[in-house]
Image (cartoon, rainbow, N blue to C red; front, side):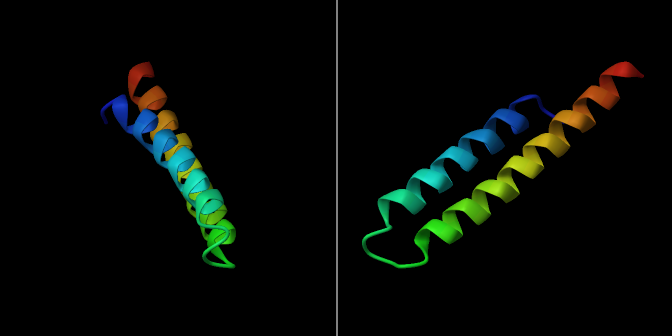
Length: 58
């Protein structure tokens, strides 16, 4: 895995939450979608970081 995968997922998390906040006045459920996507990206960043740490120990 590339070490930039974790940073990329964290950046996508921030963008999805910001997008949810920005579109809150246009669509009622945009914040729920933004937080949900942010959570998915946060979990994937944790997965990539754990996988990278596991590979560096061996």
